[in-house]
Length: 379
Ligand code: MG
Image 1 (tube, rainbow, N blue to C red):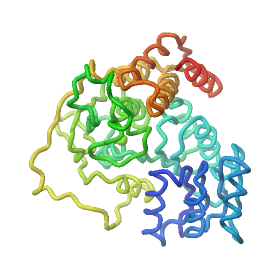
Image 2 (image 1 turned 120 degrees about the horizontal axis):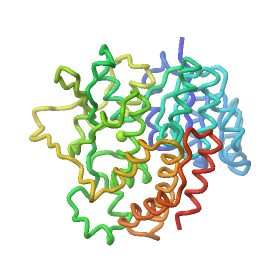
Image 3 (image 1 turned 180 degrees about the horizontal axis):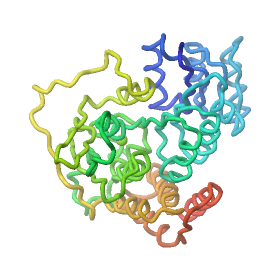
């Protein structure tokens, strides 16, 4: 039987690639619901190709635009937060791909988990801001969580067949971003255009900037803590500019397992959608003979303080990770809009962290309130 899949964020970079994966495994996967914010022409194309039962968009105005362009269709178009919830909880779906930013993802994913749907997670906010709550719900519902992130997918692959108790540490690799070799003194002059040129991965603008500041890696550290139940002292970050080794696990006997592959997000997406089962595809292959070198270096924590902010927030727990996430999102927005320079992203985040009073064991409401607080503090 085909597995029904919901894709929240189907017109973004991850969403489009998830649909590509669905289309090469038509006997295993089918799309039952999609959600986009406001990309009318792309969503109409996707509806025609995949005939989902439900499609959620941002507003009634967008809904009307989609319906006009679409013409006669069996797909029901819904909108707003209730629409998103309807898409996330579409009854015939078995798995929800989460690739939308922001707080609306949190509510939608919680609802899907309660209805016993497996989660394929690309949105970092979910585990970064509310990891404890989510992992508790996932356990209670007995559903599975798969990461759509090359690093966590690599770790999950390395852990196959292993006893989790024998893990000494994990090593998350990072490309280092476009400014790996740029002097820190130059950071105050760097613009969004320069930061958007990621050396190895093709991604959306927000995550590309997060890669340049290493905040993305910091968030992945927090995610790894929850996904694999590891202490922060067991999670290491290593710069690996070639992005060929996607992450590694060191075991108690000194053995290190690594997962390698061409830098292509469709591989971790496929691994998640097919629930860790291997199947052939036509994506590009790794040609080891063409590889002249694989480099590794420790991250420069002074040059990239965001990595430390994320580690500290993760270790402190409570509402602090949500605050780092929201402050970062707002600072990156200002940077992308040309209002602040690259160096100021980290400075803004630091200011907000100092102003926030951390709250231990928060409810989802407290997390959302902390998120709001952080956003108002980034000016
Ligand atoms: Mg990643």
